[in-house]
Length: 303
Image (tube, rainbow, N blue to C red):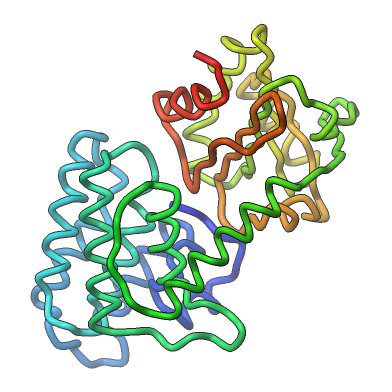
């Protein structure tokens, strides 16, 4: 799940359409409330509730079972009539579907379901912005390499926004200090493979991927891999967390969130990989497994 730093009321205003801004518990609570809100029973809730219940338990499943269940849920949601909860469920599933490696076929079904729901129920554009459901779909298409057929100006705008964001990340530079006081400047690391990871102590998917990332750092450090893990939290919170887990790679602090903003980071975890020439060659929009990290590193010539 791509966890955003935003408060619950703001996310609730758009329901699960902005589920990426919620912790898993918040996602569950808001999803459940949409099925029983205001003392009225939404049309189709008899069919929707079992799906909502399975979404609530999805993160507890072993990865192989979770992949199969995610694909089944995508098909079940697609078969629902065009009621408001269909889009909420489709978007909620999309948020959860990128938290690990559940297979291209699974992600394709998730994207097809979300596109189908948006065709049935187009979402008005917030003033000056793109509705988050279209951004969710665009991220699946651009970064997970699935297909989506959606003739909607907002989807086109979402794709254009992602392209512009990637250009800013390509041109980005920063200087931050790590927990030991050492300064790191991105563009001064040319000649090495640099993996920039945005995370936080309170983020469950971030914590889940850290051991794999640490293992790969120790494995490839001698071949020129540099990992810069950036947190916007205070050192008093980050330092004991890192010491307890014995993480070896550098932890940089960005308390003012200037680098987060430069990289257009609205949800975490996120990872950006630069090759030895400083070219942005790979990125992830959510938690990655060791296998997925290895696939990213291979694009920068580390195998």
